[in-house]
Length: 112
Image (tube, rainbow, N blue to C red; front, side, top):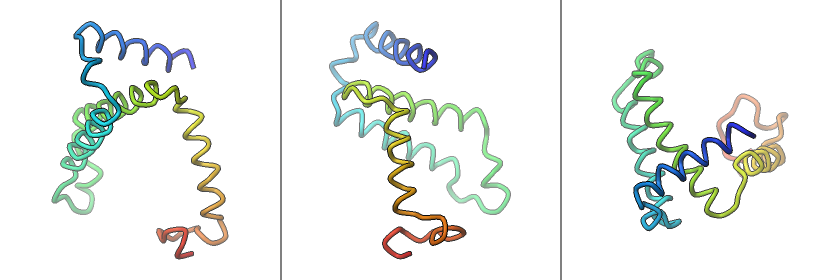
């Protein structure tokens, strides 16, 4: 948890040093996550087979860092602990996707 707090504090300091908090409302943070996710998707565009797994690691790290940074800032804005909300989601998904019905299939929970 200490490392998580360090990341949040560094993100906030970076943002505040540049007076960017004014741009970081919930809508803009959500849009930024979506746009960065699109940039992540671009790394895989038109790739097939083994090429899908052989994207440039530096670019992958960069895009994931952008997505995570905006996600952490949005969670912090709403006083959400990212670890708690992910654990809650896993619990919810365990109920929606029981192993005996979901194992080995990519079908949505309402199709199991």
